[in-house]
Amino acid sequence: MKRRVVITGIGTINPIGHNLEEAWDNCKKGVCGIDFNKQIDITDFKVKMAGEVKDYDPADYLDKKEARKMDRYTQFGIIAAREAIKDSGIDIEKEDPYRCGTIVSSGIGGLITITEQTARGMSRGYEKISPFFIPMSISNMCSGEIAIDTGFKGVCECIVTACASGNNSLGESFHKIRDGYQDVMLTGGAEGCICPMGLGGFTVMQALSTSQDPNRASIPFDAERSGFVMGEGAGILILEELEHAKARGAKIYGEVVGYGASCDAYHITAPDPTGAGAAGCMKMAVEDAGISTDDIDYINAHGTSTHLNDAGETKAIKTVFGDHAYELMVSSTKSMTGHLMGAAAAIEAIFTTMALKDGFVPATINYKTPDPECDLDIVPNEGRKADIRYALSNALGFGGHNASVVFKKWED
Image 1 (cartoon, one colour):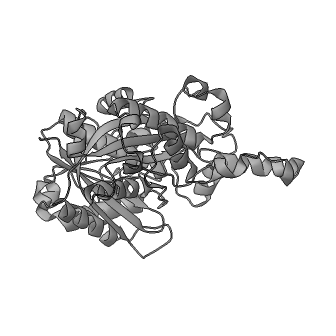
Image 2: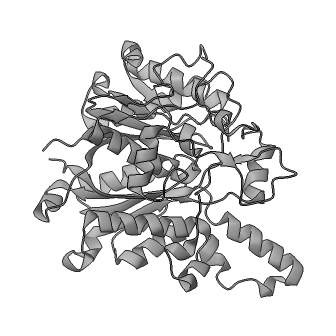
């Protein structure tokens, strides 16, 4: 018999909040976290908008010495992980540490460190760069730092599948517990790559919105969408085997019940316009959950605000759900946060879990112009009270990576 897996702790820092309470409250209110980029001089950049963590000072959360040895993305991951651990109430001293694992993703890793140290090497010589350059820049270090910080000695991995990374990390963690390999998993994603190289790299790909209006930049499913907005932050969830959670009297936010992953095998950046790969992973996730497609009440869509993604994802949903697609609520919280890439799905998993818990579906904000290609119920502009039981969250990444996770409202 497969073991049940529940969510017992949540932590986040993202463009609409420095913790779970603040972020979820702003999500319900439909607060836009998009604004003019303040981290870098954007005078000569076509792209002006970003989803930045507001008023962020690492000294508010971390010892100055430890913060200096961490890239921005790792700082975010540690902050969210500490909140999640505290929220869960788990005490590693009372656990078998080898049954407690860590899988935290990052799509890009320490890009800020890479660019800063490259500049230093070019000006001062490459043997004068920071001795922390390598550990600060590699994508797995956030997961490693979190394991060191928590004392979790089980599996420790970083799944890098571009913008699907967060869901792959969450799904693999779910299976680790369900199939008996671990009892507790700390999982999610962290990203912090809003820097000249990051902004320039996505700009020359023509992937980013060039809107000068914060309220018309990240506009998923809107006919006037023109690209995504880079975001930053982290989302961490504590997953736990049900009986283990009950035995220690843990509070339970919700349940993870299904996971599917696939590849488009189509193009290095463009999604398959038919949506076949995305449809495949959604179908797998629903089947893994042992439910019918008609049981899904809400989808937190990948919804990046690019033409190809939103149209293709809509086709995929129709392929999988048939007539039920028009009864579903489908929203994109990237309209509020922007696209956090490797951390995106982790943040969206948190919002999906809270939507089930509170019976409230977040909106796709700043929606104005309907697109006939995206004709589902996208919960435009205002969130909606709804008694939902099952929800699915999608994540689709460069390279054709697709991952979907099914969540269930907590019912003992």
